[in-house]
Image (cartoon, rainbow, N blue to C red; front, side, top):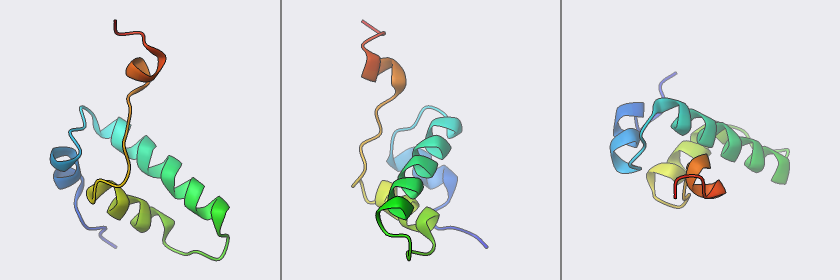
Length: 69
């Protein structure tokens, strides 16, 4: 099963620096969706679509903690 958009497209549209960050953000959002509604299926696909649509703002840990000042 292939999830659209592809990882390379997501990397470009979401200005990700690493695939790891993208994967972690997608997994975190998918868990949030699953916890909000246990009946939902395909939460990973939903999370990927939200990231691709710009509905999710991904903040790297260094910026979040203020470590890169």
